[in-house]
Length: 160
Image 1 (tube, rainbow, N blue to C red):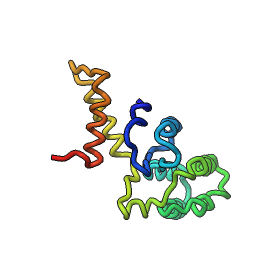
Image 2 (cartoon, rainbow, N blue to C red):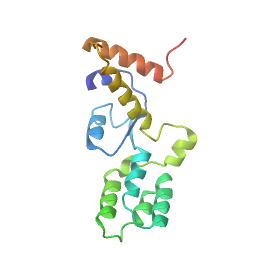
Image 3 (cartoon, helix red, strand yellow):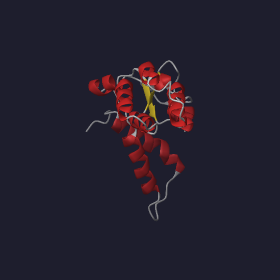
C-alpha cells in the first residue's frame, strides 16, 4: 500500500494529520519525503489530552488558547511546576509532538487544511461498515483503482 501511495503524484506540502498514536506517525514516515511532508497533530486529540490534566480550569483555558495559537512554550510553562502525573504526562506529550503542533488558529482561519481528524475517522468507520456487508466480495486488485478514484474526487480533480 505504501509503495502504491508513493508511486502517486504527491502534493507539496503533503499534509499528514493524525492523533498522537505512534503507529500513525510511523506510517506517515513511509509516505513522501521530509522535504514535502508536514505533520500536524490533530487539534481535537491535543485538546482532549490537555483536559486530562485536570486541575485549574483557568490554567486549562489559558493553555488551550496558547496551543490554539501554536505557542507551545507558553502552554508548557503553565504545567512545568505541577508535579502530578497527568501534568507531567501532558508535558511529555507536547515535547514528543512539538514539531507537529502548528498555529491552529491560522490554519483554521485561512482554510489551509483540516485541523481535526474526525472526518477521516468517520470515513474509516464507514468503509469498515461497508466491508462487512453481508455477501460483499472485495478483490485486492480493485483497491488501488478505488483509492485513486476516491483521492481524485476528494482533491477536486474529478470533472463532471
